[in-house]
Amino acid sequence: MSRERIHMDNPGQYLDPPNGVLFGSNAVRLGAGQWIIAAALLIAVYTGAPRAWQWIEPLEITPDYRVPFALSEDYWLYERYAKAVLEHENIIPVVGDSVIWGQYARPGETLSHALNEQTGRTQFANLGVNGSHPVALSGLITYYGAAIADRKVILQYNPLWMSSKRRDLQVTKATTFNHPQLVPQFYPRIPCYDAKVSDRLSIAIAREFTFLNWTAHLRKAYFNNESLPSWSVENPYANPLDAITLRLPQPNDSAPSEPIPWAEKDTGPQSFDWVAPNDSLQWAFFKRSLSTLQGRGNRVFVLLGPFNEHMMTDENRAVFTGIRAEMDAWLVQHGIAHLAPPVLSSGVYADASHPIAEGYAALATLLVESESFHTFLAE
Image (cartoon, rainbow, N blue to C red):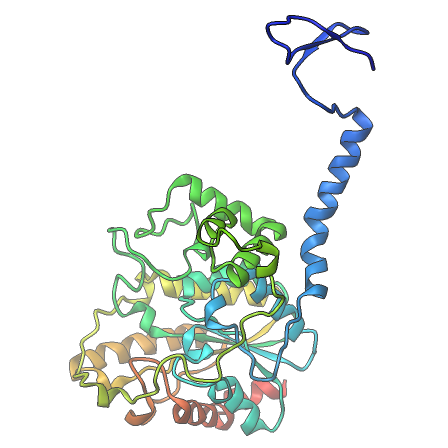
């Protein structure tokens, strides 16, 4: 289309003779049909790229696979892993925090491995996530655990998360905690969470769009969890495409933390400032997770604990016993198959709640030999 230049002192403006519309110095203007094509291409990339990436990027899953520590906050990877593992109908996911994930254990020493070994079948998968307290775990299940449906599930609850108001996220002073992207951003309010409204909106929006979670996966897996501009500043001569090696970090074969029994760490008796179940945010969100899983057609077995009662004072142990009895009674009242295991021997705990390899083997034995678990597996 011919154009006539006007305003020689401002050569960036042109006059479109057919309609006399004044416009800027755009080199190309799209028509209505072209805008439709551009929008279609954008939508195709937005929806198709994350799906195509699953074919491009290998995900090597072994029977003892667990989400690598470096990718603990890679929720796109967790969702992909859950979908891949649960394509097999006989698999029972074991869901929980770092106790399930195995903070003081190698991949072949975790609870899921011990259960597979003692039942003689590869049917339990480690879907634990390091640091996933119950409030965060509820978000993980809600937004990224849709694949956990219509099957048997083991859901663990760690009483450690209600051993103080800080761990229960009830202190009013702003406090850092694990997995803030998974907690409710607006309601219900988390007292110690003080993120800006803009950050909360970004997190809430990202949950609904797979593309945004996928780009976050690329950032975490290949760019040290940095944005591309920040990464480029630190690596001015590197090609970003070369950084995408298609080799995901793998679970370390060693235990993330040295498996030393707690008694060898000069840790004396402790007194925890327990929060009652009726007042606990963590317990409330655990019940929300349970309800979410049941609403998806799952048959849930709850593991209540384990907890290291050896490191508690006598008075504090009595308080804990009452709290555990209250939680146990709630599970009984609501017909939830569960086990509140007796305390394991002192030498198999690394701290207040994490077993070492021998502890997981002992815990698996208690589960396999319990009538409630036997019934759960047989149903």
